[in-house]
Every structure is written in C-alpha cells, then in structure tokens.
Length: 258
Image 1 (cartoon, helix red, strand yellow):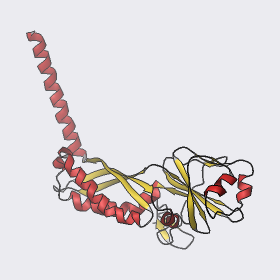
Image 2 (cartoon, helix red, strand yellow):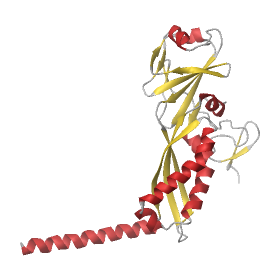
Image 3 (cartoon, one colour):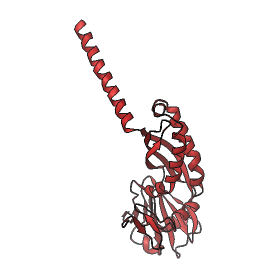
Image 4 (cartoon, one colour):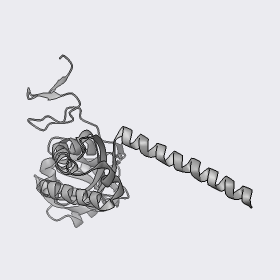
C-alpha cells in the first residue's frame, strides 16, 4: 500500500518507521546535533554524537571545546582513533598537548559519548508462553562504547547515533531469543520465580554480546522490566482486590471483638 515504505537515496525501500536504510545503513531521518556553544549535549535517547571539524583553529578561536559532565570525547583524525578527553574546558593547545599525533592543520572528528551505560529499551507483543498465551514483554539493556575504532565504523555516515537505531538493529536477535525461551515457560512461573528472569537475561547476554563487541560496544545490565498478559494480569488484580476485601472484614471483626 502507498505510504508504507520509505525510500533511501540508494534506492532501497525501507519499512515505515525504519530509522536507517536496511541496505546501505544511511539514516533516513537524520537528527541534528544539540550544541551549546562548543559543547555537545547528548539527549536522553542518544548514545553518541559526532562533530566533524574541518578547521581546528577556527573551531577553537572563540572558545575552548567543552565536554559536559558524564560525557567524554573520542578524538579521530584521518580515520584513526588518537585518544580520549574527559569532561571540562579544553583549549586547543591543551588538546594538542594531550593527544599524540593530532595535527592542527588537518580535519578532525570528535565523537561525544557517555561515561556510563546507556539504556536501550525494547517492547514486544504476541510472544507465546508454554500455555500458548500471547505475552507482552518489556526489557532494557545497558550499552557503552568499548572499542572506539570499531564504533566509529558503526557510526559512519551519521551525526547522531540513537538508542532507537540500535534497538532496531538488535530487535530481531532480541525477539528470537525471547521467542525461544518463553515458549518453554508458563506465565505463572515467569511472574513467581525471579530465577527464570535471570536465566533470560543470561541468554540475552549470550545472544547479543558477540554482535555488540564486533561493533565496538559492550553489554551492561540486562533487565526484564515486565512480562504480562492482559487477562492474566487482570485476574491477578482481581485476586488482590478480593484479598483486600477479606482482610478489611477481618480487621473489622477484630475491632468489634476488642
């Protein structure tokens, strides 16, 4: 149907809602950097942002580069990773003194990333349980940049790399792992036994770790936020309300006796 595809500049037609081209990897709706002077401010859903500087001296002429708290700058020149600068104001001479082989006369690339893990969220519907109930699942994984050289290749062609884009790339792997695990578990056990969710987290770690590592990323904490079914959840709520009614009557009887 018309309007269901997004055509990339390379000619490939992508599904509606895609953030990057499935063929060439180019962003379909590029997001602009959020700058405050010479500082990049990462939004909540941004894993990294790239600043390409053609003229280093011109960039620094008005004010030093600023790396905001909780962030760090990965420095590249001629497609080579040269070093890392932590938070603070960084004049050009300080930058040149601390980053070996950085030339003031050649273009440079600064990729701003977070110091700590960035959460990536997933939400899936219609994953079957052991009883063939269609479950909804919400989970998050923590991700951080671990290999600057590999990550620069992943980020090639985009200014801002969002958690949504990473979720789109990881989605099929996450969904397949969930599908295989959940079909052997009952919804009652999943909600009653914390060990089952821990096992699921371990399986997701195994399924995603190698893929992330090959792209310069490290996997942090995996959290299963919710596993549910509308009718099952409603039944559990009714049981809870019945218990509250019985408990209220019990307290009323005890009060009368006293």
